Amino acid sequence: MLVPAFITTQSAQAQTVTIIHSFDSSDGSLPYAGLVQATNGNLYGTTVEGGANFQGTVFKITPSGTLTTLHSFAGYPADGTNPYAGLVQATNGNLYGTTIEGGSIGAGAIFKMTLNGALTILHNFDSTDGSSPYAGLIQASNGLFYGTTYEGGEFNGGTIFKITTSGTLTTLDSFTGSGTEGDFPYGGLVQTANGNLYGTTFNGGTNGQGTVFETTASGTLNTLYDFDLTHGASPYAPLVQATNGTFYGTTGLGGSAGDGTVFKITASGTLTSLHSFVGTDGQEPYAGLVQATDGNLYGTTAEGGAHGYGTVFKITPSGKLTTLYSFAGYPDGANPYGALVQDTNGNLYGTTASGGANDFGTVFSLSVGLGPFVETLPASGKVGATVKILGTNLTGATAVAFNGTAAAFTVLSGSEITTTVPTGASTGFVTVTTSSGTLQSNRKFRVTP
Image (cartoon, rainbow, N blue to C red):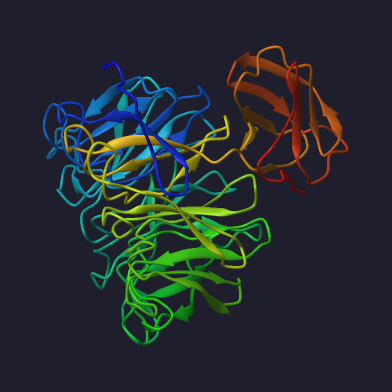
């Protein structure tokens, strides 16, 4: 465990970035992915390299910056190697993730880990069922996990798969790269209310610049859009569905200056380019976006900005972009490849792959003036279903309601409440009443039949 050294810097826009940890290789290096906030209030993430075996790590870090290395990957044949993706916390409380290499075959692995760091390999890819899963997993409404592999499968163009919590994997689709179908899905998936999954491919499609696709939970795939350089090319990241129902995403290349774009796309495939980066405002937005509680979308670019080391930006759903911060390399970090996450304390947190005090990457926080909120896990459920509520300073909570309907609840800790969807509840925001006021969920909770 390392004592965090705080480095606070400001951009020309007077947004405050606080470096809460600088990696030193022994505790990890190259934190490529973003973070996830777990029900215990801590943030969890991965590093591609470093750690005890130089094969990458899983770590947890408090919002104030105390970091603990939970697992150092050992590689082939018993363990994974190089986790490029972030983690997801399942409804059972465990964390799940992927490594692009290692495992018993060497083609990558899927693992689960308790919040205390006990790690189990659930599946070893063998190329026929996919290889090199650069993307993370999502837990769908049916309780299964869904993900993609960058390569492997029947045509070696990557796959879509589902996997149970116990590790039974089913390949749903193998990308061909022929015709309108894309190949090499670098990013993960997002599920909508109708149960379908949406994602992107880095390559392929009619123009060879990547695609946006839709697939059913059983694997029936439909290409919705083919990128064409003008509207963007090479989407690396998963999409995010905003509260208005539209998907938003980024492309690492293409656009008016070739430096990448931000776009929106409807569920039926109508795409609108919202912003083309030109270098000074950022370059190569490899990460996806997060919609914060103010309704705006926040993201990062890996390069560009005032110093050439990447940026943090805000963009409205209609496309007005503001550069919030430009990284300088030392001491504040460089090359933020991962997406941001909004902590329930209101602040944004992220990682830089390099830079910082030791040039092995950093974890940073960014205050944009947003207040605390609560988040539900899962985001939907039927009457009687158990729901976890994640928040900050929840001790002493006096009431929980689903769209105004009171619910019975138990406070487990200052960061977690457990409750059940009450009879009469309807789709809407979840609220928690505390001594400091009423906290509202960042998304509407969807009550299912």
